[in-house]
View (spheres, rainbow, N blue to C red):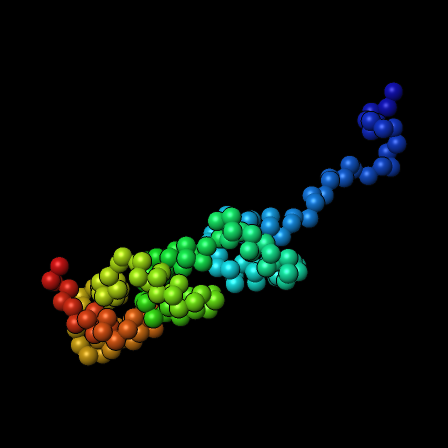
Length: 170
């Protein structure tokens, strides 16, 4: 009797059993897979589907269907993006510009910006407080703070109000 174990089919030359391949997902399934992870604008969703090899007509049809069924909403996407970027320290100028790159019209951008319930000037002050805990004491620090806020997308009035704050006022 041999110590070797025989394979169940008797011949030792057969390859390991193959796993069944999953069928290629439909454009709607791909779109839904993207949307369950996070919100996407119509433009972004169509671009991502095309990048995954979906034909343009099929991608557009999938986006239309997702929108019709409520899975995709440019308004919801815009509001989520405004909240997210504002919470990460970005100002309204930069956020408006980013929303424009997503193919949203002016009305949708304006509605999303109006829906934000935070105070942009207070957000700018918080950023300055974190960056300059003792306040922007001299002109050089005030300029640094102002430049920082401008790069983050705050407008001139918000920048001026934020760099003039007194950290001991709180």
